[in-house]
Image 1 (cartoon, rainbow, N blue to C red):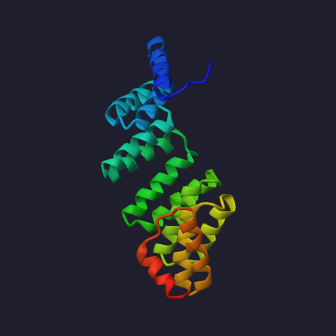
Image 2 (image 1 turned 90 degrees about the horizontal axis):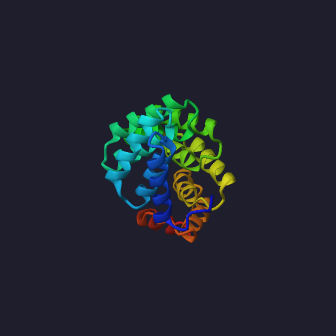
Image 3 (image 1 turned 30 degrees about the horizontal axis):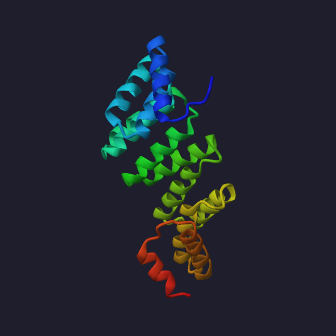
Length: 206
């Protein structure tokens, strides 16, 4: 099958596939993701519900529904859908990562750490989970663990700007100013929008 030239063509193909086989959850899911890319959230949500109706174990669809809840600042909805995702597939790293993120937003730091550690166990290259886990450790005052987790993220992706930014914060906290300067400079170089207050504070140690 030839590759779709653009999103519109991709959407048209998914609609044709659904017309030919309305019970195909994957086609409905693919259509929903394309619609999300176009910010057609209501239509995408309908297709995600239809995808789950056709394929109740489609963990990715639950995660996307959780993402739509986040857009509405509905943390509980996001949590519920991601719990459905890991129920559908126990080892679904993204579901565990999102649950950890929601726990952290709610200030439930220990629960966040547990979920994020699970996410990384299931997917050792899950960069966003490392970044969120590093923040959770920092919020708990576990500075060394936060540093170690950010450094692991950089082993996987040396240009991961968020980890450089986070390291600037934790090294500043540790009083390791040279390292804080090194990592904040790298974050800026990579185009990350560093908090102006952090930049100002680090400037005093140059």
